[in-house]
Amino acid sequence: MQRLRDEVHRYAVTTHRNARSGRLRRSVLEEIPGIGKTRAAQLIVKFGSVHRIAMLSPEELSSVPGLGVGKTLAKKIVDHLKGESEG
Image 1 (cartoon, rainbow, N blue to C red):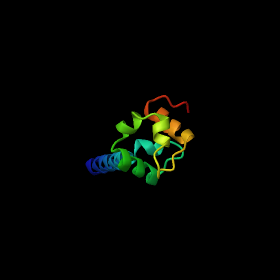
Image 2 (cartoon, rainbow, N blue to C red; image 1 turned 90 degrees about the vertical axis):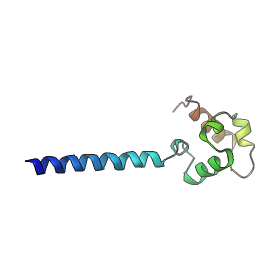
Image 3 (cartoon, rainbow, N blue to C red; image 1 turned 120 degrees about the vertical axis):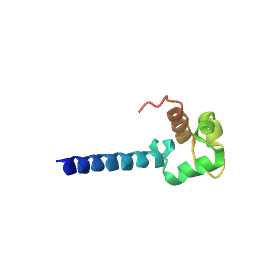
Image 4 (cartoon, rainbow, N blue to C red; image 1 turned 45 degrees about the vertical axis):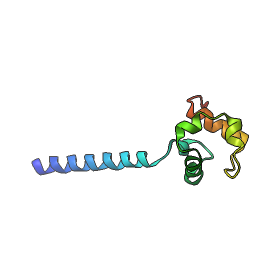
């Protein structure tokens, strides 16, 4: 009985750790439609942090050359980061 209990506990702990580490590897930016790993990484490299990106206006974000972020996507990013995402 004890071996069965230990195995169930081991499985539960391992599953939880794997799920948690998967969540930690994803950026908040990747939750936004239109933002993948590459673009999220470019934004972090350019601005330093998600907090700094959230402080920008959509116009400032879309005017940065080389990122390929248009006005619509910039608005989605800023709204999502400020918690005003509509869906």
